[in-house]
Image (cartoon, rainbow, N blue to C red; front, side, top):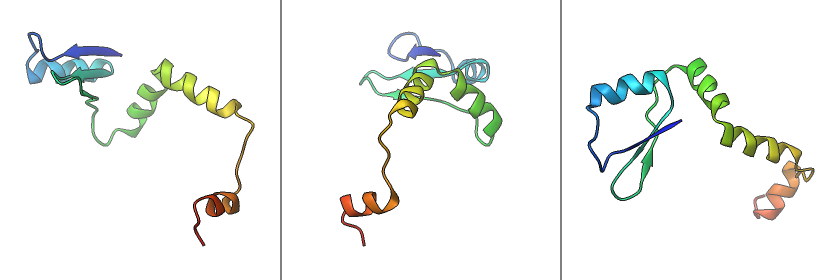
Length: 82
């Protein structure tokens, strides 16, 4: 995943789109906000990119290891939902 700082000499929109076709991009604004440009309606590509995100996959791996599970009824009770 590559971060593009838009506060410096920013690439053109066409250049950004071309980069986004090749790899995951994070666009960082002057205010520190970050955006992920992705191609619309390409689920297979989104799955591939998600799997390549090592930080996200590590987080998912850790979450899967958590032995604590809650039933539907426990969640409803905790949230006071009837």
